[in-house]
Every structure is written in structure tokens, then in C-alpha cells.
Image (cartoon, rainbow, N blue to C red):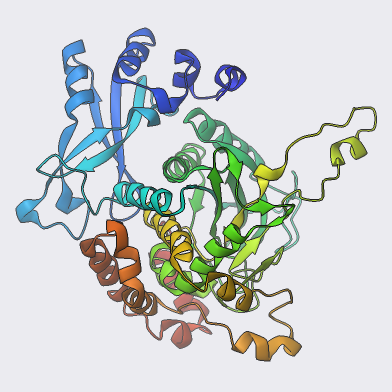
Length: 501
């Protein structure tokens, strides 16, 4: 992080300390608290439902502040995670200083930090979501010699009363502007607050989905992030969802990350972009084309894709989004600039043309290095995902590609450069593997591949067992087929999981 990024950084802690968050120490946190009239500290951490939990501390003295920052505090793990029994439920939560931000909503000046879980022996909790991701990143680095980076696209619907003015065209909301887009102010306010918490945002815009139902307007938005270290990426997505819900609450709006709201309308995904880095170089590109390393990681995702839904598609409504003839995928395949595939290779500025100079001929040629911009995108996950499990699962899958002897062959077999929904391609599509169609089917796929996820000690057996138990408890093996034409039953189902993740 250079000096300009420190000066312009929206995170008040970074701006005050004039150092990157990754270098924060306990002394830095105490200095910020003392010099900025902070009166409370919050520890925040994900629970088994995928939502952030909060523990509040009022600062009584400098010694007490030092105690909580050093020792953390006890919490009841059995109330947070279904796989922890009440008979041995005590856990420690200890703050990660690098995640510090000023709570943008608190009336009393408050500093928030994400916290990590530790067991009774003072060791990282093996089944903790954030520790699982840390283990996945470490294993990827040790096997490949590269760093795994990611970023997310948060899609959501905002629900507002329908006043009848400037109606948008149904399902044509992509990048719409006000006044046809009704929630632009909401989105920009969310982006501002997310940036203050340290979120590295790429951009925001209105999305395809918009429709009217029961006197309300349902308008879809998206906030997309920049690729960074996968652990930081997961932290930022967790905080961003918390911010979006808080902004909605304070503006008197309702917001949902639900995968599907009603049939025939766009669902909301949580697309994850990935890239692999070595010595500051993006290994996704070689001589302006997708590299063998990138194809290798894609092959790993192709092999494990049916099991990844166990982390990224956590409730029955997820599988009402993963249906044919929508932009959500159903077939295990990949392709360039193709939104009907599971893994998409988006445009990567590889033409070597100076488009900036073309648009602005008075400016001299920029000579900007665009190689860092190439990513690949996994399109199956949605807002029900456990973000840490999901990115850990993708990290494992990409590492798995490098451990496969036939990775490039698999990449070649699963590549498509055609529209998979065209009738003339039906035979080729039939040869592709399919994503699961229910939570129960996802649990079965996870069981099939569990050894891969447990290798290198990444996913604990307890966590895999717990995920399978949660998924099978839905009893939805034939649910999609049973109610797919019953709008009333689908709406009832959606209501039950409206505030998932």
C-alpha cells in the first residue's frame, strides 16, 4: 500500500495511523482509541447461520482495554455452532487487529474488530469458518507456491413501496439510472459505509432484476469488490452484508440476499472471482492468453463443482435459482465471456490496445499494465453461502487442480464456446456433469469428495459432518419438482429463508 492509498483510505483507523491494516498492532489500536474518543469496543464473528454476531465492551479503563485486546473473552460455542455440544461449549474469541474499523452506525463512538475462535487449549478452533479458510490458503501456498486471491459480487433485492412513478422495464434493470432505478441512493450510501469499514469496492450498479408484486417494487442491486487476499476478501464480504442490512434498516427499507424470490425473475447470486499470484505477478495470463496455471485451477473446480454447492448454496431456495435458461448455471463447464457456464473467464484487457488514449486522444498513451485484471468467476454460489466455507472450498478445488495428473485434459473436455441452451448443442450439453438440484443432493456430493476437502487438514471431519447434517435436514430431495409450478408454495418457501446468510 503506497502513501497515496494511505492518505485517501476511507477507513478512519488506516487514515489516522498512516499504515496498512495488515500492520496494525495492539499499541496502534490503543492509540487510536485514546486519540479518537472511542468509548466502546465490539468483537464480531460469524455463527453457524452465516451471519455476524456481536459482543459489546464498554471501556472502563486502560488496563481493562488491554485485557480484552490481549485475552479476548469467553462465548458459548453451542449457541453459535450446531456441531458444538453444550457439555463442552466454551470458546474464546480474540480480536484480529487488522480488521479494525469505526462502527459507522453507533451513537456511542465504537471500534469494531472481527474475532477468531480458540478452543479450551488455546488453539485455533479447527472447525471455525475463518480458520478453515486460513488453512485452505496455507495449503494452496504450500502446494503451488502461489497466493490465492478472491473477490465477491454481492447481489441483493431492495423492496420499496410502489408509487407508480417512472416504472422500470421488467427484468431490464441492468445498470439503470435514476429515476427508473429507485434505490441508487441506498446503494451509494452502502458503498460509502462499506469503504469506511475497510472494504475494497470495485463498483456498484443496479442489476437485471426488477419487478412489482403486492404493491411493492423489488429492485436488484450489486456491489462488487476488488481481488485481494482470500481471507481479507471473506472478512470484507461478511462486513458488507452487515452494512447493507443496517443501512436498509435505518432507511426504512427491506433488503434480501435470498437466492430466489419468485419464478421467472432473476435470482441473486454471490459470484466469486479468483486469481493466483506469485511475486506480485498475476499467473492467470501468459502472453496475453489464459495460462496453463489458470486452466489447471479451473479443472479442479470442474472436478469438485457438485460438492461446492454444499458451501455456496445452503437452503432449498438456492436450487430454484439453479435452473436452465437463466443466467445461473446448471452444467459443469467453463468458457470465455459466457454467462450460461459455471466458471466464466471474463474480459481481461488482454488486447494490448490503449483504449484510454482512443477515448481521450488529447492524453498521451498510458502504458498501463492490465495483466493484473484477469480473473475467473464461479457463478453457482448465492447469498445463502457460508462465505468462509465457500471461499475455502474454492481454494481447495483450485489447489486440487494442481494435484490432478489430467487437469489440462479435464479443462479441455469441459470447455464450451457455444450457447448451452441452443437446441443444436443438446447432445454436447448432455455429456456434461450437472450441479445438484437440492440440499440433500449437495450433501451426497460433498460426501463423495470429502477426502479432498479434508486433505492437508483444511476442512475438519466435524465440519463436513455438520454441513451434511444441516443440508439433509431440509428433506428437499424432490422439492423443486414437487412445487415448481405452485407459486403459492414457492412464495411460502421464500418467506422462510428471506433473510438467509
